[in-house]
Figure 1: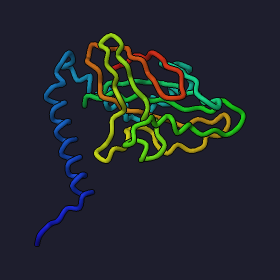
Figure 2: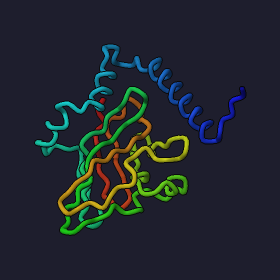
Figure 3: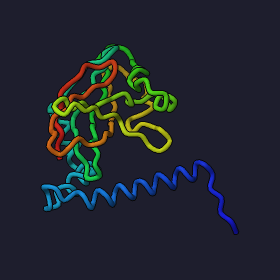
Figure 4: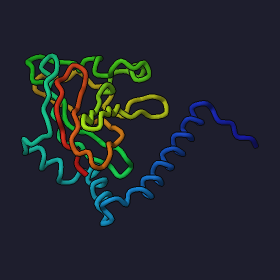
Length: 192
């Protein structure tokens, strides 16, 4: 019996292999300053849906709040450095207008590879001005951005959760400028 892989299956195998390699690399290189298990705690906290979200719901604290077009406001609530060498920026997109609004297609940026996968926040970047580096949204092996995609029309007064994942800046970088097309820029702090 012979096994044949389609192009999609090959890409999937490559993606799994790369992900496993990154995970092993991160485990081997994560010693740094915290040998006390802080990284697993922050990683599990980012996926925990227990009491943390409800604590944030009653709180007005955020890293930044930036205004976009048509009454849309992006409230960034966390920028967490993950053990795998990534920074995940999370928050919510709120329609502060009086009629339904859609997130502009321009937020996907202008890279053909990202645009061909539909609406997203793929145009977002983190800028480390001190080191003169710009970090773009990560992509999977098919070129899909690792962000919220296919966002629905947002009713007036409603909001939807959003996320974007970037390569992590060096460990000594704690502040970066968040940029997203059609929205104002803001300085945010990276935790973890």
